[in-house]
Length: 136
Ligand code: HEC
Image 1 (cartoon, helix red, strand yellow):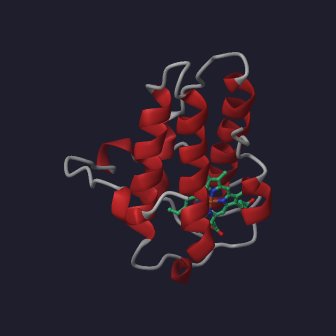
Image 2 (cartoon, protein in one colour; image 1 turned 90 degrees about the horizontal axis):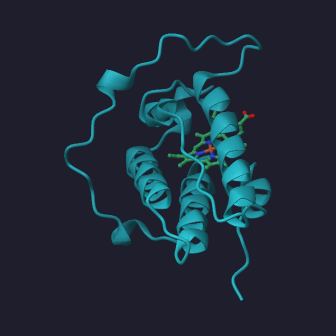
């Protein structure tokens, strides 16, 4: 599990320019729920691609993770942004991974999902855990 202490905060990071106004909620799901489903799908696709020694780029809409509205505003605690930025940083490392460290970089992304979920939204944790690639 990635710990928050191993995370180096990226000071130049900003989400303002990425505000996405095309995001409509057809089934009354929150913006954040819809984003999470895309993030899950990306991770599932990336997991498959690892065995083909391929990397799957992530859509830039993922940068909205800090601003997307959750179902309930109280869901986000004071660590939310730290976890969100940690996730974005692991995504960047994953995108730059080579064949030798792709599995590890991928698992780091999933561990960043789990780090936030364990304190914010434990429901999907078992489903997210199944994305991890066992290391031998
Ligand atoms: C910074 C915190 C954070 C990170 C990182 C994070 N999540 Fe979430 N996730 C949440 C919160 C909060 C919700 C609840 C959203 C809501 O109810 O509006 C959620 C909801 C979900 C859901 C349920 C969506 C639905 O159908 O309503 C899934 C599945 C999910 N996340 C998967 C993931 C996966 C996979 C990753 C990593 C690729 C990830 N999450 C990373 C905080 C996070």
